[in-house]
Length: 108
Image 1 (cartoon, rainbow, N blue to C red):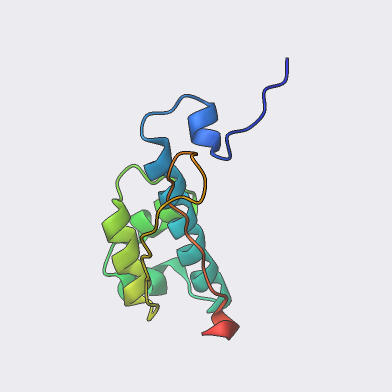
Image 2: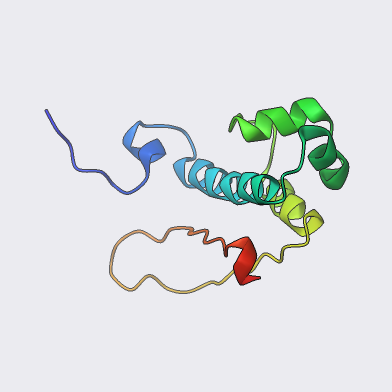
């Protein structure tokens, strides 16, 4: 059987806190993209983020259980990127959701 996606794989799989998990993945993706674009080693990234290299490895491999959304946003700030939060009512009667959009390095 095939089921239509809700737009959040974590919700589709029945995970706890699917919105938070999706937000973390999007933030981690932005962080990892910046690290890649700047060609930072894990040691260099660790110094910039003020964490250990094993934590950078966990972040790079999307093992995000040890990171809060707030901490991931602080990592973006440490990498010189602003984080903008926009609050609005949903356009339809659907559920409200959190959306993370990252600008590319060359757009900043």
